[in-house]
Length: 278
Ligand SMILES: CCCCC/C=C\C/C=C\CC/C=C/CC(=O)SCCNC(=O)CCNC(=O)[C@H](O)C(C)(C)COP(=O)(O)OP(=O)(O)OC[C@H]1O[C@@H](n2cnc3c(N)ncnc32)[C@H](O)[C@@H]1OP(=O)(O)O
Image (cartoon, rainbow, N blue to C red; front, side):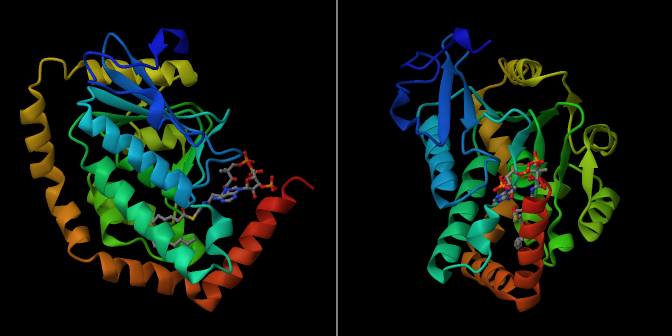
């Protein structure tokens, strides 16, 4: 499947080179269509630490500069798209690193949610918490069966901030957002389709990518400038609200994580993840 994708400078996605491909984020651009497949590559679960967030943010910035025709966000894992922020970075955290983590997440969201080209998430597995935020920041989501997606923050003892709520409100009905967030619900693939959290189901990873390509192809007759201006009109308010309150948003995150009851929960939660294997 991937063999038709080329890592080299191409006419449709100008002067894009493989230099920005790092171990954490692989980039392959289709020579014919100018569409980039960007693959998260931080085993075992694509946990988002500062390096992974910054790597993805840089790739999106480069695609923007090089007038990419569309983005398909995927994962190198067999059954996990992304398990969210790296929990080991928020349990007993180093305070400076914690700030860097959230700042990097804010920066990435601003770039991905505001991207001037069509963006899609090829969900070849679970997309939890921060992983769900990545998917929600895209324009379209295709998921394989028997996976899970959602924002479980209230279960973890914290509350999602305004830009995360806005990303979900952009996709779901008001009622569904309330139920999803207040219950901290994680949805199975078919339930996610029912409420509109994903747009399509595909049989396997290759098919998720194919369906994302088909979605992006629908924009081939749309003028790029009109596309980006319309998207900015639709999403700009949520982005401006974050950019004008970055410090407050960061403080809220830092305070939430440092709350002793959240730390206590995280300890048990990490133990329960580890003990699954025993
Ligand atoms: C929590 C505080 C957040 C504060 C935010 C405040 C305000 C803003 C609110 C919302 C905005 C969005 C913010 C998001 C925060 C986050 O993203 S926190 C991360 C939450 N993620 C999860 O709860 C997912 C946990 N993982 C799982 O449920 C499962 O691992 C899985 C993804 C369903 C996969 O299951 P599977 O059985 O295939 O694999 P394992 O569970 O065996 O995992 C393998 C291995 O990986 C470790 N691991 C799993 N998830 C994480 C992770 N997120 N970070 C780090 N490590 C992780 C797991 O412990 C195993 O390790 P091993 O035993 O050493 O092999």
